[in-house]
Image 1 (cartoon, rainbow, N blue to C red):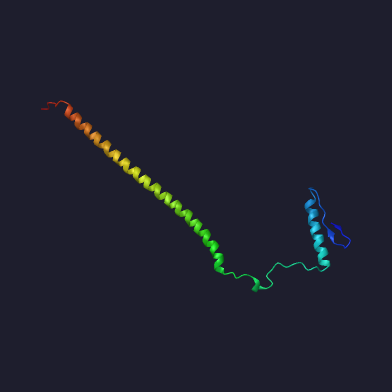
Image 2 (cartoon, rainbow, N blue to C red; image 1 turned 60 degrees about the vertical axis):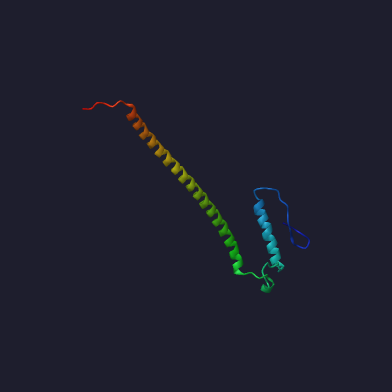
Length: 125
């Protein structure tokens, strides 16, 4: 930083280089050293008077946690509903397969009876 007539360091615009970060850090430190030497009062960003802060209940912060938990629970319930629907579909497919197997068995039995009826009786003595 170069100095102004009042002695305060002036910021310098630097182009990108390998030393830019180091020089920028030195500029910031030079500014702090200058302000410390002049005993300059920096602004404080704290609550100087707690009565001027709007009321805040601990339960207010819990609302964010509850909202997050609610979203998570909704996603889980949607997942469970989807699984329930898939399970219902699988049960109906199973019932259809069972009916098909029963029909196959019935057809097989009918074939064997039909063959018995169509074949001439053998003379077994």
